[in-house]
Amino acid sequence: MPDIILTTLNAKYAHCAFGLRYLMANLGDLQPRTKMIEFDINQRTLDVTERILAHEPQIVGIGVYIWNAAQSAELVANLKRLRPNLTVIVGGPEVSYEVEQQPICHEADYVITGEGDLAFAQLCRKILKGGAFSDRALPTTDAARSTIVPAPPPEFDRLALPYDLYTAEDIAHRVIYIEASRGCPFECEFCLSSLDVPIRNAPLDAFLTAMQSLLDRGVRQFKFIDRTFNLNIKLSSAILQFFLERHRPGLFAHFEMIPDRLPEPLRSLIKQFPPGALQFEIGIQTFNERVAALISRRQDNTKAEENLRWLRTETGVHIHADLIAGLPGEDVDSFAAGFDRLVALRPQEIQVGLLKRLRGTPIVRHDREWQMVYSPHPPHEVLQTKSIDFFTMQRLRRFSRYWDLVANSGNFVKATPRIWSGNNCRAGAPPAIDTASATGAVALQTPSPFWSFLQFSDWLYAETKQTHAIALARLKELVARYLAEKINLPENEVSSLFDLERTASSAAPMRQAKHLAKR
Image 1: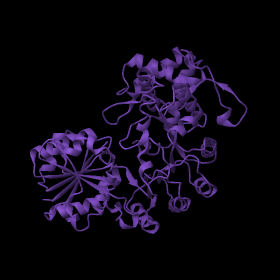
Image 2: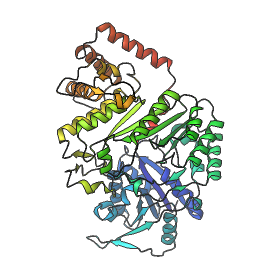
Image 3: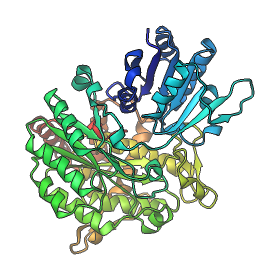
C-alpha cells in the first residue's frame, strides 16, 4: 500500500493533471511510496473517497483548481470525517490565496500556497518522520488547526521535469501539457499569472531532450501552457525551430501568444510551418483602451491587429482569439465594437468568456466603483456590473455558448457569416460598423456581427429554452430556419449553404485538437 496518494479531479478525462506529475517527479526517494490517481469532476465524490481510502494511505495530496473547488471541498470533508488521523494536504491556484475564507483550507491539515513542486516533498518527509511542520496556523471552531505552508517559486533548474510520467494511455487518449516557462511580466488585474513573477525559463537543453523523448514515444499534439510563449524570442525561436525540423503529418503544437509581439525572427519560422501545424491562443480580451488602462493591461491594439492580419494572410496558423465580457468599465456597446473589430480580422475561433473573479487577483479593487457582482460559487463568473445589468449579462452568457456551438464548431463555416451579412440588425441595435480601423482600408459600412448574432442568440433561446444538450441535427435545422425566416434568405440559397457545409466538412482535414484551447 502506498504511503502517499497524489490526486485531483480533472475537468474531463481527456485532461491530464500536469501539476500532479510535477509533484511526483520531484518526490525523489518518496516516489516508490507514492501513487498518483486522477479522477474527473463527473465522478461521484463518495466513489472517489472510497477509491482513495482503499489504498490506506498516510497522506493524501489534492490539487485544487477553480473547476474542481466544490468537489474538492466535499472530498476533503469526507476524508477527514471518515479517517480523522489521515493527513490531508491541499494545494493549487484556488487555495493559494484568500485561504482564511475557504472551508476547504480549514478542513485540510496543511495548505501549500504557491508552487508546491519542492515544498510538497519536504512536507511529506517531515510528516512521515513524525516531525511537526509549523508556519502559520488557521484558527478553527474546533481543536483542529490547519497549517499554511508558503512555497516560494522554485528555479527551473532545481526541478525534475515530469514528462516521463506521461503514460502510453495518456499519449494515446489525453492532452499532453508542456511548459517552457513560468510567470508573466504583465499586470492584468483579472489574471493570476500577473502575480507570478519573476519569469523563469526551463533549461533549454534538458527541455528539448524531454520533447524529443515525447516525440519518440509517439506524442503528436503538444499543448504549451506558458502564458507568454513569445516573450523570450530566443527561447520561443529555439522551440519552434525544434518542431519545424521534426515536423511530420499530424504533428501539432498549441501556444499562448502575446498579441502585439511578433518580431521578424518568429515570423520567419512561423511561415515555414504547413497549415494546421500550429495553433495560437491570442488573448485580446478588450479593444477598449480606457478599460485596458483601468485593469492595468498593456497592449498595442494597432500592432495586435497587424499581427493577426499577418497570421491570417501569410501563414497557416489556426488562431483562437479571446475576448472577456463584463470587465469593469466596459458596457455592451463597447464590447460589441471590440467583438466586431475582432471578427473583421477573421480568426478561426473567437472565445467569448465572462469575467471570472479568480482568488487573489486585484480585480476586486473595482468592486465598489463599478458595482461588480460575482457568483459566490466557482468559477465565480460576473453576474452584473454598473454597466451591464444581470439580464443583459445572461444574454451575453447565452451568446458565448451559442457562438461556441455555431461559429466555433466548424459545422457552420458558410452559414455563420450569413447571420449578419443578410441582417439589418433590428431590435434597436446599431445598424452598422465602421471597419476602417480593423482593415486599414477604405471605410465600409457593414452589418454588425455582434448585434446580429445576439439577435440570433435571443431567438435560439426563445425556441429551445436551453443552451446545452442541443443535438447537432436539431441545431442545423434551427440555423436553417433562422436564415430562411428571419434573414429572409431564399430556400434554395439556404439549402445550397448546407450542401456546401457538408462538402467542406468531408473535404477538409480534421480540425486540429480544438479542445486544446478549452480550459
